[in-house]
Length: 390
Ligand code: CAA
Image (cartoon, rainbow, N blue to C red; front, side, top):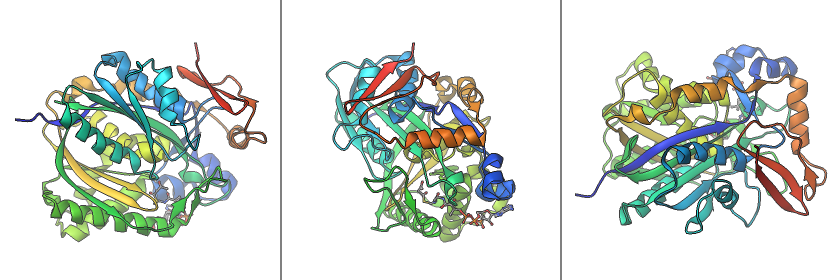
């Protein structure tokens, strides 16, 4: 019998600063409750001058390698929509920082917030071909919108790293999956822009349509009915979006669960994203990590992953939480990672945001700020410089 394949280890990293959304509300003239309750967000991570998708992604992956080494890893896939180069994969920089050997293929994947899920499915196929292989997936993003826009409170920054392997310690993925694509302009970032362009209201509709389309396709491809799924991890651009999506799917599936029961199926997935903000590709896997790190024993439970990337692509799949999964978690460390961020006021946050838009992007140095194991030193003659911090 072929072995189960799925997520063997899962870790995250985020920006080293954070800002309470009440601080943004004061500048934007909004009631803080609009962000706390209306969007379901309490604060958001902000990156230091010398942090980017590579330093966050490598910091997440380092935790996995510290525990189990790189043995068996022959592929590193880097999922992001915060691309730093049109040609070279961000994962090649991470590969060096992590000290992975030369016999590893490295590639970058892009489709807005969705591409980490594509990476995971491609990884499953590689492991099915050779169950002795492990695939390292890194998903890392910085969400930036125009200052003073309605989207500003839905920014954030974060990365996850996970390994896909046979006989996984955390989540055994099921073969059934549903996919959906529709060419819509709800959110995109043209090459000339450092911030995304978004049609906020239509992005919500596009998300709901795509996730419902992926769920229908999941049912048509051997998926189990809605009632047989215990917990649901959604992409969370803001956590209230998961509430909207879950109610939408429940209504479509004709579920008889009351609103409180529906909320209980998603509430434990929101703890990290509520504090980190939107981390695009990493977001749905931060939802999974928050769920696994929670108080409830989930052994044997069926968990859904509903992945969405604007533009738009969605996928719906499920997995079973593995026996003994709790031994593979880093719950206390993860909490310290969040509480250890330095709070910034509006002036410091605005200064960081403005510094990110460089007048001369071909040549600059960054200030030493990050406590992460890796730092982005700047750009020298068009070449990005990364180095260990210590
Ligand atoms: N107290 C409590 N709640 C309040 C409130 C108050 N004082 N004032 C308003 N609210 C509620 C509103 O009722 C609303 O809740 P419901 O949607 O449940 O009715 C919520 O707060 C937000 O209010 P608005 O709709 O008025 O907010 P807005 O128009 O200012 O902006 C937004 C919201 C459109 C999401 C905007 O933040 C945005 O454009 N964000 C970026 C786009 C985005 O995240 N889209 C999500 C889907 S696309 C995707 O998922 C891909 C991705 O990662 C980007």
